[in-house]
Image (cartoon, rainbow, N blue to C red):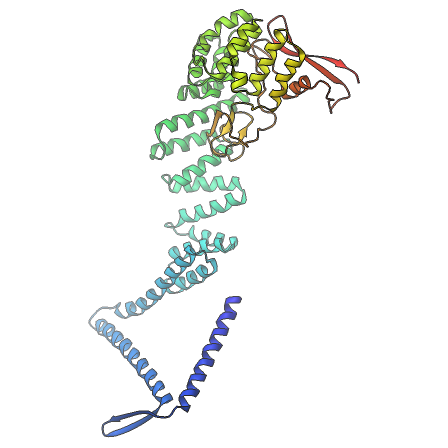
Length: 511
């Protein structure tokens, strides 16, 4: 609307300027004297200007007529398309100029201007395979999603532009959050161009988000086949998808198939901790503890992790604390200076009621690199060694405000996930979770891992540890604080039970 008003104002201004100039020319004295064939012609100033304009017009028409005459002579000589080409050349010249102007407008972010130039280019060229591409993108830029969708659908009719049309509608559906339709469109786009990397990645992400692990593995294999993925990355991601597939099979009750799938996932990527844990438990259920032990040891050698220690404890759930300490030496000989190894040894010695050995195993971890878990272990050592309640509560109070240590953090968006998953709970990226300490300012998700997973006892199942949660630590650090969910205040104490398991023993106390 504003542009139309500007054009009208400019037109009126030009007419006014021309009228003013004509009036000034009429008022001017003198003129031009032309002598031709013995006859003289006297022209005033305005008449001279008009004559010059008519002369230029006549020259232009002469050149056009000459060009047309050449085309006509060629036609008479047998070139049947000479006249057609003459007129087509003019249209093409105008059409390609409009096409170029449309591309420039598109690059400049002028959506409406690009749409206008695309319509002019289509008028002269009649090439929808070219002009519709500009029209669709210009419509999106201008915010006209309906026009863009209609143009993309028009592209579907031509085999040469079908992939572009599908891809355009796919992006629109993704922006709208319609993942179900987007998945079908991604499959269609992949069928049209299986080598297209962006389509491969989009389809893989949608399949993983839809928990279509089998389809995702096929897409991943296609990426490897077409050279879009290094083999080592392929093996790792294929292991992640195989593990997810195993979990799904296990949820359906097919334990044998799930066990085999987990073992296959571990074979593909031995350092994938969840796969190692699930495969080890599969071997335990199958009565093959040696295989489970070998598998956990290999994974621990790659990276120590508390879930691996839990799985290693489940191999012999009924053993005593002393026997467990001896057996775990196979595990703790790897990475003896790793914080996870130190905390594990401290927990095992606490279970065996050897508190000096537990303190020695933990070393200066609670002071040099404090985490909620190491501080809580230190509180358990102090309690077992007979220290005052104030000392124990001091360690627990520090645990409340300390870092939780390594967690499953997304390398793509830096979000902390409560548990390992094939895709990030925030950005949906595949295979981006790594066990590390989150960066500063990253919030932990509620309901995450327990603070003190002691690999020492029988509670919670075969070899599964008891744990001290943040709520229990808060109660121990400040026993006078009331529980908002209950009228009863519990006074908690860390105690050592007969079988070597550390638990929180709470005695009810009425207000």
